[in-house]
Length: 301
Image (cartoon, rainbow, N blue to C red):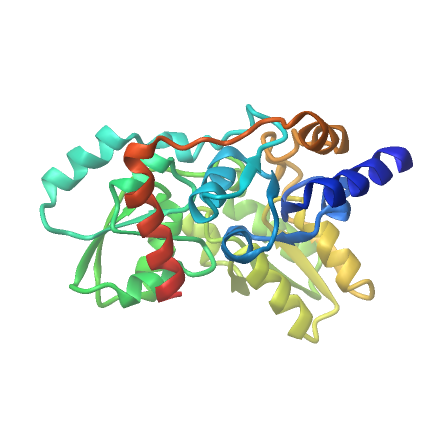
């Protein structure tokens, strides 16, 4: 492993490359990354970072987002089949039909969506900024796709607007049930329950705090509580344990493991840098419109 890490660092220097890793990546990959964070943070990094190459350790929609925001950079996805089932729950044709049923209503799409869906939307968002973006949009009604659970959470934070929600969901976060929350509260009575808004609305309502991975981390940093029950993907525990070694963390559900996020290994990162695996390309017909939705998100958020 040590030789692999050394070679990764050498190739980063040779190629003027940076490694971006989502909080859900395995510990070893997070450890070699130059930047680690949630989708919103990594989007901003991709747009601003000075490099020739971005190795994006995440899933395809994230690497595509980086390519849209940094079109002059080579963006590599170490594992080409690392996808997102949530993003695949709506197609551009689905969205066009939904828009035809609600003409003139602005569309806000979650970043967990395809480039084509982004291009058919008016603005993008992440779980970290969805509430702020929704509140900033004109009018009193909006369409939100594809995550119905996140949409429900945002709708409750922005009650002055009516939301049309698409029934998509994250398979990993959907594993958490209300009974799981009750069980862990009983077992760890001193712990705060922190839950991602992609979870079922009934579960979200039981949380002491609801937020994106970066928001969960900030809550932990500022909280005086000694222990926390984490209701999001297990990868978050690595950064939490590194940054807050004196606090205790418990995973809310043993099934909080995203198979696609866990595909990337150190060997994948090395191969990406050494063999240029796997370059991201975006269809030119949708680039400008899809990029606009991301740039508007960055402006509003």
